[in-house]
Image (cartoon, rainbow, N blue to C red; front, side, top):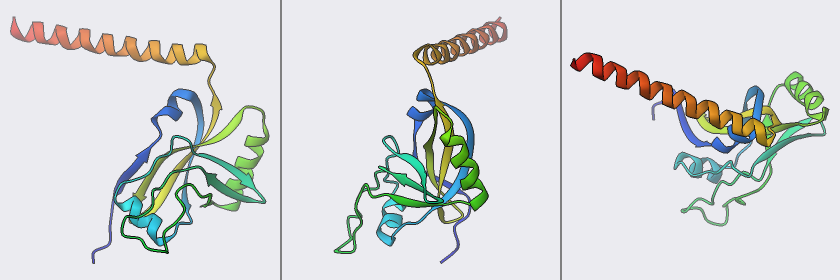
Length: 160
């Protein structure tokens, strides 16, 4: 069988970019069982309720939903178990010191396969206030309106 290359997105946490200000991102591997990998290859996962933490010098992710594999038997996994993250020791120490600061948290952004290996994009983030969320929505809406106006102007000048 040919080795996989490239990047295949499995799940994305769009809500995280709205709820948090992303300060830094890390790519990390995950310790998974065989049925979890098979379920991920089918494109089934949910990161919305997931969170990460550092405990005992190791990084963990909890509450990420990877449903049971349909053809799995007694070897099937628990859907919301905690999973160990694979990061370099210096990265873990850096993350741990940042998380100890008030307001910082670890949020999963996306889950994907990179060259056949399951990877998780983890973000060091700070929660947004309500007015920050409104400001972000307003900026996005203004950008859309300006893009529409530019496109309309191009259409008018091209036709006339």
